[in-house]
Length: 111
Length: 115
Image: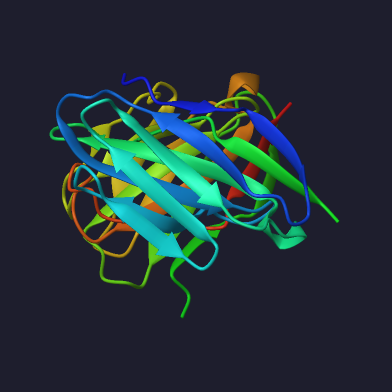
């Protein structure tokens, strides 16, 4: 069982704030790192899949970076809106391993 | 565009009863998965099927069985439900196998309570 850690566990911000959270994962046997967005009462939806060290992905005001050598990825949200409120999950895929999910960061954006 | 469809959405079982969660995907994906989600825990893999005709245990397989009926359908069976199996269950699928790094698509979840 691989150790995929996400921090912080939860985050409350005001509308318009920028925020970021971290996913840490094993730095060996890296294959891919996924970010998912999970709204309450819905199913997780993929945001990004990153496979190369130094990858940066962007979707609207959300972006992610990847450092496979040190085993971490950051997810950034610029100018948070209430509709960004969700749990953000990361999942690590190793060469011969099943994707392992972190416990998620719960983001609440207050109007 | 249905994606991944799972049924039932809600179910209450008595301890010792059996039930099957059904899942179907219409994206022609090779791989399918069953996860469970518990408070304070991440998504934990119960079983997966990397391709039609194969199934493998995940992190928490005890108390469950699965059947990959065909390429579209992957069912999860609880033979004798226990209160510890109270959880939200997600079926999912992906184009390629679990170690390929490809995107996983999830169903909407099945809320199961065992009393």
